Amino acid sequence: MKASNRKIGVVLPGRPGWTKIAGIVGILLLPFGLNRPRPSSDEPVTITFLDPEWSHDLTERNVLPDESLQEFTRQTGIRVKHLPAPESALDQLGLVRELLRKGASSPDVSGVDVIWPGTLSEDLIDLKPYFVKELSSVDPDVVASYTVKGKLVAVPYIADVGVLFYRKDLLREYGYGTPPRTWDQLEKMAARIQQGERAKGQKDFWGFVWPGADGENLTCNALEWQVSEGGGRIIEADDTISVNNPDAVRAWKRAAHWVGWISPPTVVSYQEWDAKNVLNSGRAAFWRGWASDYFLSDESSWLTIRDKIGITSVPGGRAVRAGSLGGFGLGVSRSSAHPAEAMELIRFLVRRETQLETVRSHAEPPKQLELYELPSILKAYSHFDVGQHQNGGGVVSRPSSVTGQKYEEVARLNRFASSAIDESKFRWRATHQARRHSENATQTISRVVGLAVCSRR
Ligand code: GLC
Image (cartoon, rainbow, N blue to C red; front, top):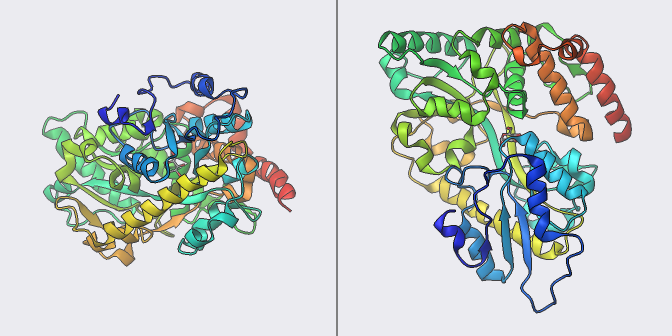
């Protein structure tokens, strides 16, 4: 346990060595059973906060340092139990959903990934009437992504976007003045650097690493490839499905070709941190990560290559250049015994984040880090950008607001479709069922979403 975890005010459980949802559910529910008597009014209130960014490695993330929660306790007298979440987005959703649906009083406040509002809307209270002031300064598109049928399921908290990390020292060494703007350029640079580094003796060096395991990160990657070639965004604003079209197929074939060429064969089992570890140990030239991986992480997680990296927008294809919109908001459980205190915590955290953004937008740029043509959404960092900020990529949203409760199913089907293009490389879903699904992806998604669309209207 970190030393600071023991300070008064914030009650933190020990570092989790468990990953199975069932185990976590059991452990979390133990002290907050439904039959537990409510504390008498003179007892200090303790609320629980399930934090998706506080995952298995306490040294990595710095989104919410313990000191902030202690400050909250000092200001309000309300105590906070800070609960960790599993690593992958899917496991996190499974845990949050299970806890909320059990009707337990814990967690009072939950982190809500930008793609979850449709899934969790019934389990969280409408925060719109309580956060009018805070919402007035938030981008309406971001507010919309946390709103379901007029109900504000979560207050936007951390905005995130997919980005490309690159080794600026290697780019210079191999004669590239700027990072790639297109997938074609990335392929050329990655192949050349990989060949050169291997010739120098580093046999396990790879050009480009990315999270290719079956999960939400792959959905984000595949969506970026697809939209960049003009292949659509899975479900369009007019409810048409864009999965089975030549541009999407071309984009996915391109990615399949990377596996074993500029990306390791095992990339298809990489979670985000597996890919990052390859970059961090000096064995890759490019990594597709999230802006938060750098800007909200502890400096120490970059120690090995801190002076050598740059960040730019995810490359583009024939059509556009766009990174997936990510991030999370904060929601209050319908079963919370302390909704007023829970909202007070949200108000405190959102205010603190706004203050930090202001500080970041006036701060000195980090000395060694190179920022080049960042996504335009990262406004607070625009003055660090040595390229032209306005040339950075846009964002692409996953179709979670159209699909509502069906998002997981649609995302999974799209992953099946994208990865079945070349089964020999994307082997993890070369099953009979996957093949059937991929052949019929468009029809299946249409059927699945058809239900969602009907219930939406
Ligand atoms: C990041 C994003 C989140 C996304 C997840 C996928 O945490 O902020 O929106 O769903 O990655 O793994």
